[in-house]
Image 1 (cartoon, rainbow, N blue to C red):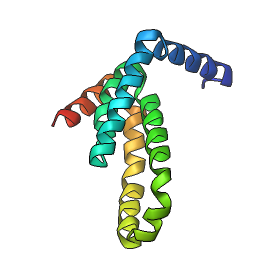
Image 2: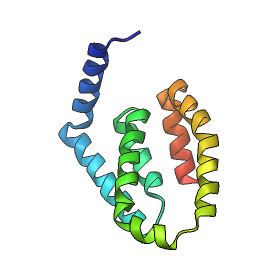
Image 3: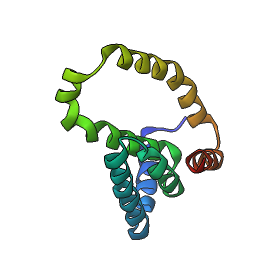
Image 4: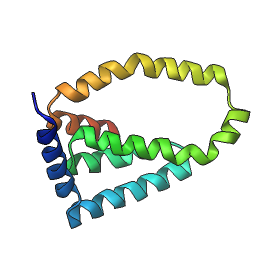
Length: 126
């Protein structure tokens, strides 16, 4: 099993590769375009960001970055959403997420990165 120093070294290597000038430029550009898509449509940022990010960093890292973007972006709209939202519909979506998250995380951890990259790209194109 990898120790903390091994994980830290791996993280530093992956981060330095992704943050190389050309890699960072592509990540920032993909995040900006994904933000525009989300702003105009209300969804779809993952379809834009993930195929690009997964070519630059491992799938788990790309997912973490996407989750940070997706969680922080709508925080300004939270007060209005709480007033106007439908708790029953949100509960149904949360239940669906709770059921599908464990198998999805298992696949993310156990499938080879290349297979995940192709799967995400095919879903995004479809």
